[in-house]
Length: 207
Image (cartoon, rainbow, N blue to C red; front, side, top):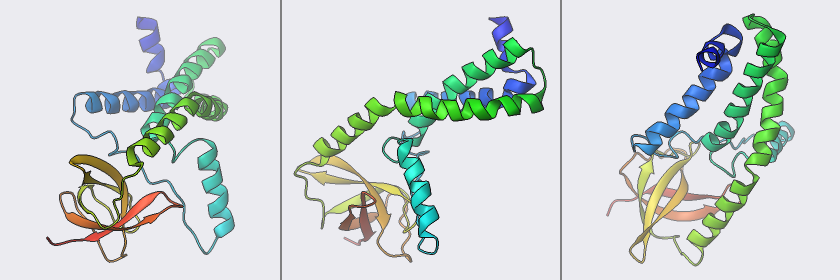
C-alpha cells in the first residue's frame, strides 16, 4: 500500500493522480450534499456560424464520446481511474521517474482511456435517455412559471424547476434573450423548447 501511494505521488504519475483526486473530492462533496450533482457539468455544445464545419466536427467528436448525453463529471470519473491505473503500471514497468517522459506516456494512455470511458458509459447513456423521456412524458411546461436553480444566460446552460401536478420537474434552460441574465432563485417563464439543443428557453417573470 505504501509503495502504491509512493508511486501515485511520483512525478510521472502526478497529473493522473491529481485528476483522480479531483473526481473523488467531487463525488464526496455530492454524497455529503455540499455540491449539486449538476453544478460542474458544463454546456459543451459548440456553436459557430462563421466556421460551421469545425463546429460540427467538434460536436460530432463530443457526441461520439457520449459527452452531452451524460453528465461531464460521470464521464471524467470513468476516464480518470483507467488513466491513473495505466500510468501507474506503465511507469512502474518501465522504471520511469521522469516527469517529461511520464507526459509522453500519458498521451496514448489518455486516448485509450477516452475510448474505454466511451464504452463504460454506454449503459448510462441509455439510462439517462430513458429517465429524461419518462420524466417529461406528457408534461406540458411551455407557459409555466419556473424557479431558477442554476444561473442561466443565452450562452450558459442553467437549470430550473417547474411544478407539474405538485411534483417538481427539473429542466435544462437557457435565457431566451441575449440581454437576460437569470440568477439562482429568480422566477422565470418557460416560453419555448429548443429540440436540437434539448434545452428550454426562459425569460424573467415578475409574478
